[in-house]
Amino acid sequence: MPAPETRYDRRLAEILVHATEVFCKKGYEGASMRDLSRESGMSLAGLYYYFESKERLLYLIQKHTFATIVQRLKTRLDGISDGEQRVRIFILNHLEYFLANQAAMKVLSHEAEVLKNGFASEVAAIKREYYRICVGLLEDLKRERGLHFSTRIAVLSLFGMMNWIYTWHNPRVDAEAESIAGEMGDIFLRGVMASGKTRKER
Image (cartoon, rainbow, N blue to C red):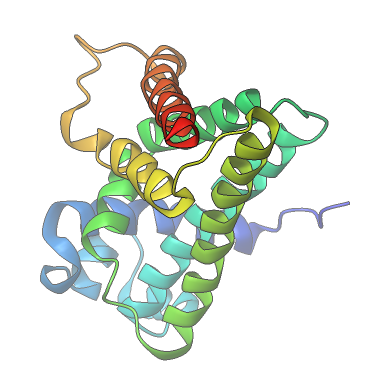
């Protein structure tokens, strides 16, 4: 059972939202703690009470984002055994979060190499877990359907399809996450299934 959310936790979450907006607008290097103070309505002293540095803010944004995506995915996959359906759940989970949190996604995509030392390694560990989950889903699909294709190329191609949606998605003309995930899933799965069967026959 999760621990009850404290006032500190709620305030921390609010500051992270404001910090994400500032980093999204100005970039990590261009943003200052004073900018973050103005955006959040908190004094500099108050801000430093929660975060000793701008880097820690970026670390917490990245950690929270990836941990949330992974946890939601695990919950959705629980009890689902069909390989294709599990891949489609992965795609939907990813796109739903990206479209609902576009500022955070822009920050993550543009500032991926900023973190150093312990901060970087901790976030990298969560990213590796997420990557390994996707690898496992495609390996399961290959075994289930008797397919033969490069899992690495397929996984990286899938992330390439999904990760840049924030650069082109226009809510006025584009569909919502569920519809896009369905179409993207069709394109991806038809591709790997056709490729996998062709390679097996060679």
